[in-house]
Length: 308
Image (cartoon, rainbow, N blue to C red; front, side, top):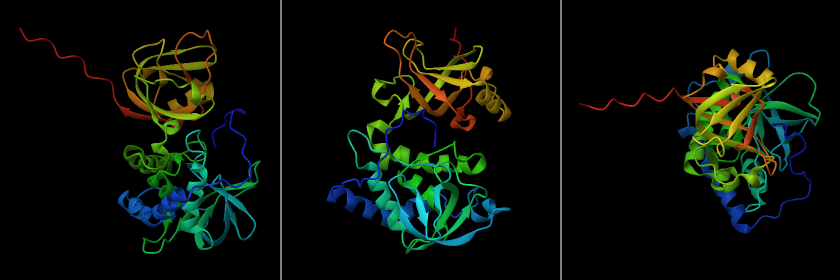
C-alpha cells in the first residue's frame, strides 16, 4: 500500500461490529457485483487476463481459508496474499464498519472456494504477504473474474499504483471510475470523495490519508529536491502536488515532463499532508508513484477572439 509514514490509523484484529443492514447490503452486492464487472469489460481483451499476466508466473489453483479486514487472504497452504493493484477500504468516522462490509462482500465471492491465482515469485514482504492476482468463478457469473477489478467495479477499494503498474493498473483505473461516478461502496463516503482542486473544501480531517483529486495544472516549479505541480486557480487555497526526484524522473520516463503539465487536466492520488497553522499556500499532496498521476486532457484551448 501507499507509505503514510506512520500516519495510518492503527489496525487491530478485533472484529468489526456491523449492523444487520450493512451485512444484508454486502450480501446483496456479492450477488450482483459480477454484473457490474461484466459490464465493465471483465472478459474482453484487457491487460489483466490470465493470459496477459502469467508469463513466467504460472497460474495455479488454490483454496481460501480466510479473508481479513484488510482484504488480505490466507490460502490453505499457509501463505498470505494481497490483491495487486487494490487499496482496501478503511473505516471512517461516519462509517467505522466500512472495511468489514468490504470483507463480507469479498468473502461471499471467494472464501471457502477455489480460485486461480498468479502469485508474484520471491520472498514475502515485511508483513509476510505475497502480491497476487486472483481469478474466481462466481455462481451464475462469468469464469475467471479478476477479483481486484471485481471489487473496484463495486466500489470496495481504490486502485493502488504502489503495488501494480503498467497496462493492468490503467485497466483497473477504468474499473474504479465506474464505481466512483456511480457513488458505489466507499465512494458514497465523504472521506473517500473525489476532491475538486478548484473547490477542495476543508481537507483537514483527511490529513494523513491518501486522497484522489482532479484539477487543471495552473503552473509548475522545481526546488532543490522537489517538483511542485499547482492545481486550481487560487495558489493560497488550491492543492499542490509534490514529487521527489525519483518520482519526477519516473513520470518523465512515462512521457510526461512535469515542467510541461501546465494547462493539462489530471487526476492524482497521494498522501495529504497536514498544514502548519501559519503555512502559506494550499494543501500539499505527496505523489509517491509516477503512475498515481493520470493525464485526462491537454491544455485548454485559447479563448475565441471577439468578432468585429
